[in-house]
Image (cartoon, rainbow, N blue to C red; front, side, top):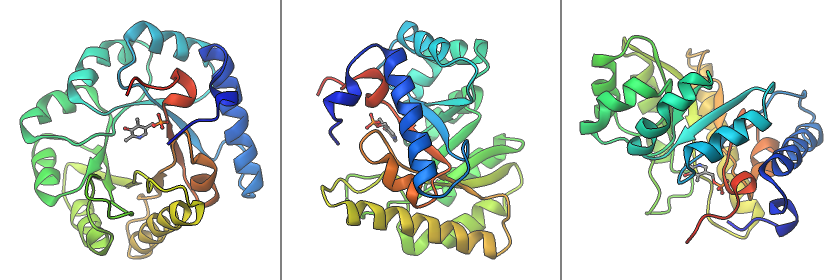
Length: 236
Ligand SMILES: *Cc1c(COP(=O)(O)O)cnc(C)c1O
């Protein structure tokens, strides 16, 4: 997804200020209260100094960080712990990396199978997890199919050791805003069905990135995950 150069110019601090304004404008346009959407900084490929500078520039506002790869989570984990910033794993988790993930992540957003949930539950005590849903059906994307998502969420919520906090998706890679927004609406309807079925704590909707966060906020995102709008384009 491309980012308007107008929003990617300037220092990290400038870009954070503009990003916070974008989120506030989208909350307002959707008729949602200020502060109803939390910002998660997607810090993949950024070194610890760059991330520290961003978190310091943003100090005083609620913020989360997310890493895609356990290796980077482990490398930057001590920094995030020192800065007291809640740290989410937002990329797929292999079973041989569960120990490291549990050590450094306060939430695993990428649970897409009951097997992984059971392995986490056996080792955790109240760990927050989200079920990741592949709303677009793109074969390159991680996540459970929408048709299986409600059942998986129910099974995860029933495990001792885990707390189902909500749902995560990576939006469709499409220039058509209606397609992208439709995927976010689908995640919201899955969440609503699970909450209505009796899992009241599962309210989070982690959806929307640099290029499409307005569409996600319009559909009820509670967390937007943003990288390039703050850190600049990643090398291809
Ligand atoms: C990189 C990444 C993001 C942030 O994407 P940007 O387009 O850089 O804002 C969000 N979610 C996941 C899972 C990512 O890997």
